[in-house]
Length: 47
Image 1: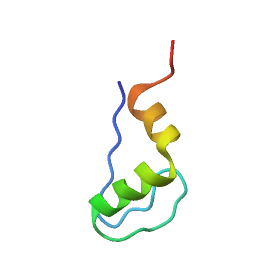
Image 2 (image 1 turned 45 degrees about the vertical axis):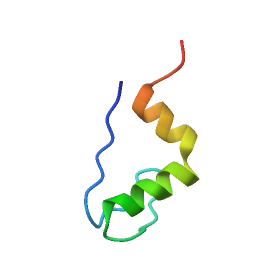
Image 3 (image 1 turned 45 degrees about the horizontal axis):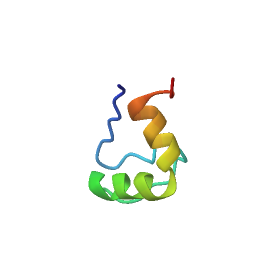
Image 4 (image 1 turned 90 degrees about the horizontal axis):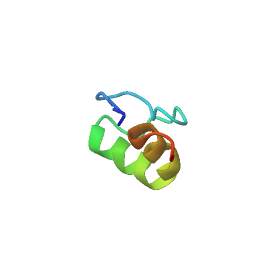
């Protein structure tokens, strides 16, 4: 399993877009806009 760390004021790790200074808003963006990339980062490749 993987790990994804997002700090306050950092851009989206997948597209670089700044969402806001709240990490939960960044996670909502990633969850909605990049679900496949998020799943791959957290759970790795399917076997």
